[in-house]
Length: 140
Ligand code: DQA
Image (cartoon, rainbow, N blue to C red; front, side, top):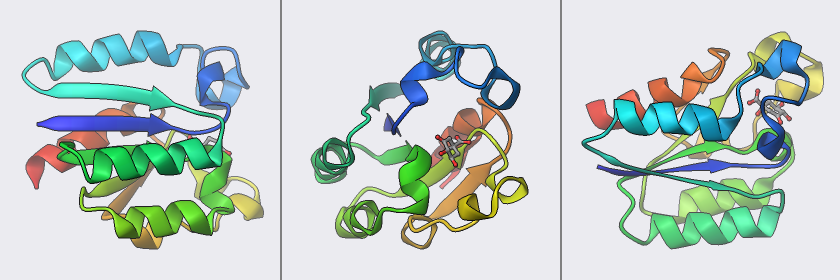
C-alpha cells in the first residue's frame, strides 16, 4: 500500500517540543522505525506549518496514488474547516491521529473539525498512534 503521513504545525519540533507531552524522539527517527516495520509498503511523510500547504498536499495525494492518508493536523485540528472540507473532497481515506490524548487536555482541544471528515481517529498512544493508524488502513 502507498500511505502518506501528513504532519501539521509544530510537529517538526517533535523530540524537543514539550517532551513531557510529546516525548523525546524526533519524527525523523520514528519514521525510520515505521518504514522498517512496514517495509513491504510505501510509507511517505510530509510536514508543513502552513494550512494551505497541508490542503494542497491532501489534494495531491488524495487524487493521486495514495491508498490512505494519516493526518496529524496539530492545532489546525481544532480550527480548520478548510482542512475538513479538503478531506471530504478527496478520494483517499484519511485517519486523524494525535500523539497526546486530546480529550484529556484543555477544553479547546476537545473539538475536532476534521474528525467528522475522517474514517476514524486514533489519539493518545504517543508516536505509536501513527503505527496504529497505518495498521487500521491496512486492515480495511
Ligand atoms: C496534537 C494535539 C494538538 O492539540 C496540538 O495542537 C498538537 C499536537 C497531538 O498530536 O497530540 O500540535 O495534534
